[in-house]
Image (cartoon, rainbow, N blue to C red):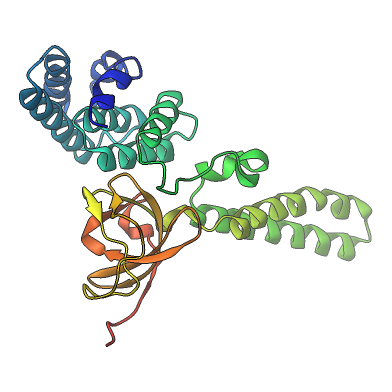
Length: 276
């Protein structure tokens, strides 16, 4: 499968020039990352080529740590990671790019390409669901922001209804329809969406899916889950996580093998002490 990274990605990569000219934090490292990427593209020797792509990815990661955490930089990081044959880090970077900009065309395209490189038996998310069709804006707001907006709409509707009763006027009551509709839409987004906050990506080369939180528990799948598998974290029993695959199946994997899509301070998994 490795040859696919080189041949199939050549026409799907992000142009780096616009990101480099924007002078974000870490500009010197950004320029070096772009230079390493371009040199790698023109390098035939495989091991040297992979090392240069991986060095480029590390430099893009440093740029993000310096504060330039925009969708273009994350997509650049994903491209360098994918060319460096680190599909887990690539999928994670594309997913984070889509948090910064849910409509980022190149991140969407390259994420789909990265998913296509996964073995056919690996469950993968399906796009175009109810929320994406009718509540397309819900990905641009965090859960806390939606909760706050819903509470504000409810409070405004209540005030308008109170004013209608106090002044015996139908106008405030009619105006209350708008915040009520907004409140219903926000609540639907919150209740129907299980939450991006617990989504994660396997970044290790592979992770054995076990029946319980123990190295002695039997494996549940035909092979270890490969890097790039997208999961939802349900429970933490350090150093283990109970995760849900895209097909709805729950398994246990090592905590060190995954990285959260959202910032760590947004993660809301239950944490239980290890029991035997």
